[in-house]
Length: 441
Image (tube, rainbow, N blue to C red):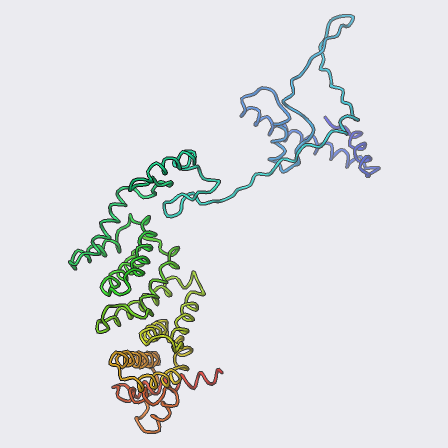
């Protein structure tokens, strides 16, 4: 037996457990010997895997870690062994000379740094095919050149028409050529060429790097062509094609796309002559904004709320033109029935009083036409409420019902509703929604 009973008793007494019985000490000695055999056998495996023939402290520590046991500290395995020679009466023998350590000097030395644990961090290697310029990523080739040398090269071209860009273009020549070809095709008067370009944007899978460029193209085109109705229509078609391409990730650029859509919805003027059909463009923009809210509403919970708040301010601002009011009404209606009930319906009567006064004091044909479109948009809002209430029973078209409806939406709009084919159903839905809103208040 490697461990005797006396050794076990001495160790137990040193840790405060005196007078162990002989049976216990015998069993513990056998268990310790068994555990030592296990550790040595495990350490031997590490030694053989390391192609060595000498067992080291590192092997023992590795075996202890496998057994979930604290490793042994304070032993250096990399220190060379020094043998000393001494002579005896019979022969010369060699022994390992233990190093003498000055404890006073050792205690005065500063403690070594605690080794850091292994940690993992994550960073973006590339976003949409573009490598972010952060510390973890390698430096691009164009930045390895000293900045002073780049500046000197750029200044050499200041006299001419061309300057050397400090940042290398991230697009390949093929993608640049594709983008230029598409944007030129969108300007073509030929409908077939234009539709082919839009179809390419909506189905091509290899243009994900161009999403940011198309979004920028939409913003710049809308800003510079607020009086060109045909160009604005084409730009809205580009936005729709981008969003409906299943191979593109448009979500990061959604906040840059919404201002362009809102501009085409509530802008004061979108054409050269007011007789042009800019109303259909506003309807299309409203439909797109509603699609954006449905498409990205789960990722951005406040998106629809912020858009509804913006449109409500435009709807209730008496200083805004009627074209802006029309776009706000259509946009709020497209956002859903709940938005129409909460934001549009309670404000119709107050809005109609201002609209009637404005149209009565001015006989301008354009003003009257714009006001008629706003009235038609409000009637459509009420029709949307009626269509949502599928099981509601229509009411009779009596003077009493007209008076009740006028209390909610005003006399002018009540007369327009009574002229509709489904007037009974619209009146019932509006009165029910108005009653529900008053109960909630």
